[in-house]
Image 1 (tube, one colour):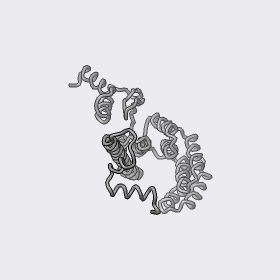
Image 2 (spheres, one colour; image 1 turned 135 degrees about the vertical axis):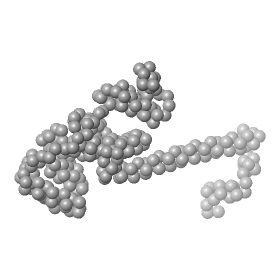
Image 3 (cartoon, one colour; image 1 turned 135 degrees about the horizontal axis):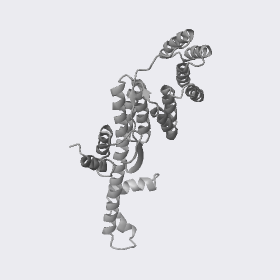
Length: 287
């Protein structure tokens, strides 16, 4: 029953250290959905064996309103989008630069030009263009999100989170922007090897915008990272078992010795002929 006492117990479980991370995450979401955790409230959450601060966020999804730009600049912008999809990045950059010359307030042109420079591996220029777009419109979520992506790719996760916080402060987001934000959260979670969180973010992003290209690419990375993590655990377990087995074997051999200063004959008697041949090949390979 949804009573104050029940919510208190649920909060105690969600913000405690008992149970699986996934179960406590579900409890935390239930508290948020019930209004028991207010938007903007920060809570201490036990995850992956450590405490972390989490801020509750509420996103209002809206349809973006059209912006009036110079018609000729818009035509160049639309043509550049075709060039981008065709992989003609240098041609796209030329058109976008012309569009900006015609309409210096066209934030979408700065954003797309930044994406073009990223394709051309000109990261510093791309970052400068995104920062310029944000100067023109501090609530231009797309630029903030692409900037967050650059920081996350460079493993500057604090800078990436700062960009996401700026997006979270925007009162109204399009479904695509919200999905993009969740995908960046997934990217950060992947780099921190929080695989369950990454999968949850990607599922939420797909629910909002299933055709967002980066979702599938991040899913592929998630599967690869999970496989590598499982392999590391398997190798680590095997190495531990082999070390324990070798130690047991050494102790067993030591137990067969009758003196603390064994002779060569005493030691030889502990090994099979095959083992002795292999040892000899290592010690004296020319014989």
